[in-house]
Image 1: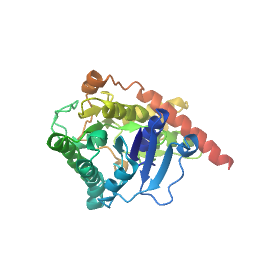
Image 2 (image 1 turned 90 degrees about the horizontal axis):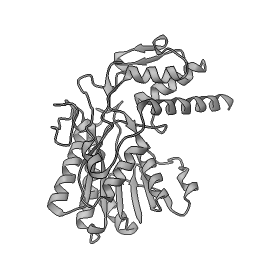
Image 3 (image 1 turned 45 degrees about the horizontal axis):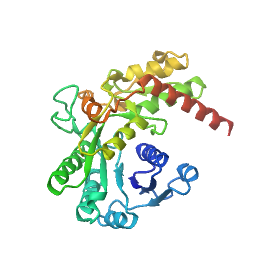
Image 4 (image 1 turned 90 degrees about the vertical axis):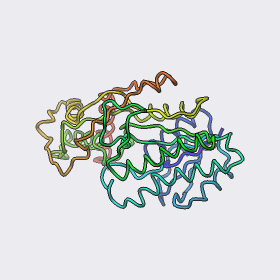
Length: 324
């Protein structure tokens, strides 16, 4: 079987490609980044993985690519990420985060191989925005509070429309925060882990964060792509929340990360509202009971395990950089 994975240089694209390759798929990874670094997947799976430059702003190109490559599965992770700059350039953000999913749906609708292809979209808990209930389920009202969330919501609704109106085999994974060593430092988990490692090595003095009592439902990225894979392989296409169902505060993340290195976070962490990335008005906690009941998926890696893995990775990286 063959799969197309968009956003291949991002965290989720990488882990999805790795999962597929380990299950004997051929994978074509798409990236819009000129000069993107060569992934280790090329060396690990030289006969089954390739990466190509792709213009997500050209609507007809994805249809041409699907006709040429003839995949059985398409996983879309192409998006401008949340966090810093979420409100910058809303038109371009909407075109990529919302419009590109429609390009894929249209290509599938018009394809004579429509029944042989499955499309899984990476949606986001940011679609809930100003939440009406906690935890959120698949039936919770959607009220996004950012251009990112609004664009993801547009794509999410269109997934349902094309599935019902045209019989396109497509589904949407409502992903809550999910972390790994491949996260960028613009995300609070990685920011905390890196700071703890640098402070331990005497390379940094302090860390400025926003509201330490802000909380989120944080999970493990490799497990979340496994959930999407199960969705795409299911007999019946449906949308699912992918979450742990547990809330953790930023303060607890600090306690875990610094405590792992025998440090007291209170000696180093300072609060700074400018640095806050987590909206205080939102309590994004997912209810994963539907995906557990239908597909047997559970989040098994604790936030403590995730933070320790991130800290150890950052510690090793900082030591390696110091030796160079």
